[in-house]
Amino acid sequence: MQVPQISVFLENKVGRMAEVTEVLAANEINIIALSVADTSEFGILRLIVNKPEVAYEKLKGEGFTVMTNFVVAVEVDDTPGGLARILRTLTDASLNVEYMYAFVERSTGRAALIFRFDKEGEAIKVLQAAGVNILQKVDIFQN
Image (cartoon, rainbow, N blue to C red; front, side):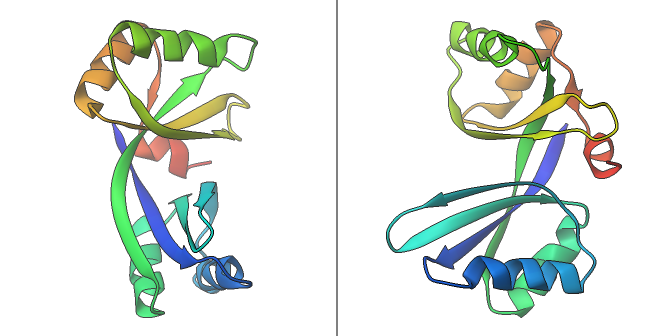
């Protein structure tokens, strides 16, 4: 129920994200979802890609500071209140969202959210009990 996520730590300067994407493109690695968080000096590029192990190795080999961790992907109704329902479910269970970002599943046309939780196992159980579809790695990578 967890999806591998690649995090790349980048200096906040011209061309660094282009370099990452060029390494991925040269190795036929497709970006499925991404998020960028930055400060004045550095940024974190978070990626869901179709070949996470290869992406990690290739980026590391090019001198990037890279980390792999696991996140939870869920389907959300692409209607007003879809996200609010999920967040209310988590809030009512006193679960914290550390960060999140979204993408559209091409095969279904539905929205998908990537979550990082402080208590991941509990969050998965609460969401499943509320009828939220937790996406598997294969669901995401086949898009």
